[in-house]
Every structure is written in structure tokens, then in C-alpha cells.
Length: 175
Image (tube, rainbow, N blue to C red; front, side, top):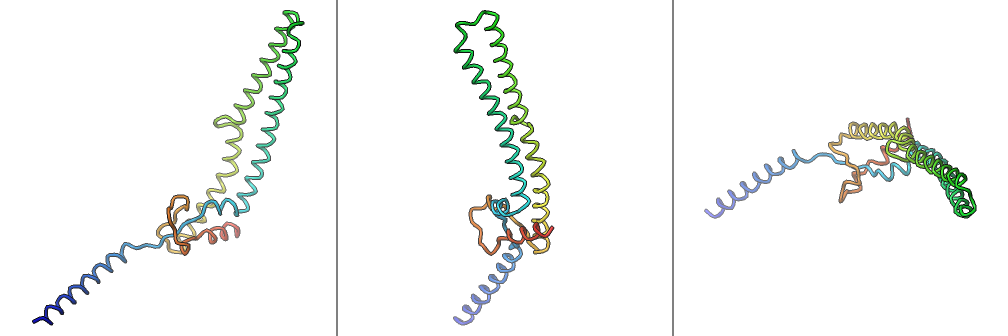
């Protein structure tokens, strides 16, 4: 009698294990992740675009600094001379200062403001590259039969076996 109970328990345990294993295997998929920082650091086209943007940004910034310096010099000169200037000359200098200040404000708004030249240029350079990166990720996922590929910035833990970053970089550099 005891052996029949033991046998029944073993059979029930095996059946439960088989059902559990099949349920688990049906839910397990193939996962991968991409290290975005590595993509941005090693994807040559991205690095080149960043260098181009940084060069233009520096020129815009240098122009804004030059305009700021001119304004500061004009104000400093006015402050030194305002006691000896006539009322008309004071108004003239104050108008020059205001015009310089307005020009600087307009320039910084046009270049660095929301939807300004800098933002538009960055989007112009980055958008096609992001599209290529996403296409490369999709290709890796399709060819590798991945169910999910995450951006590594969104993960708390990822086993290195699932990192497909080098494959994505390889595809990007082949194109």
C-alpha cells in the first residue's frame, strides 16, 4: 500500500513538473539589450554628426560671446562717460546699448531657443541616424529571432549573453 502511495505521489509530481515546465517554456522568449551609450560612442556616423554639430555650436556660441562682450564694452564705456555726455549723446548711447541688447537677445533666441537653429540642426543630423539604429536593431531582432531587445538604460540587470550591441554596430558599419 505504501509503495502505491509513493508511486502515485511520484507520478503526480512528475505530471505537475511536466505541466509546469511546458507552461514556463511557452512564456520564455529570447531577450536582448542594446547599450545606447556604446552605440553613440562607437557608431562612426554618430560620432561624426556630433563633431559637426559641436563645431557649429561652438561657432554660434563664439558669436553670442562676441556680441555679449561688445554689449558689455559699450555699457562700460557709457558708464565711464555718462557724467560728461550731453542729454542727446546719453540718449544716443542708451539707444545703441538697447539695440545691441535686443540684437543679442534675438540672436540667442533664434539660435539656442526652443525650435531654434541649434535644435533644428541637431535633429537634422540625428534623426536619420536614429532611424538607421532602429532599423539595425529590428534586423538583429528579426534575424536572431529575439522576442525583445531593450535599451540598456531601461534595465536594472542584463546578462551579458544577451548584449547584441556589437552585432548592431557591425550592421551599421556595413551599410
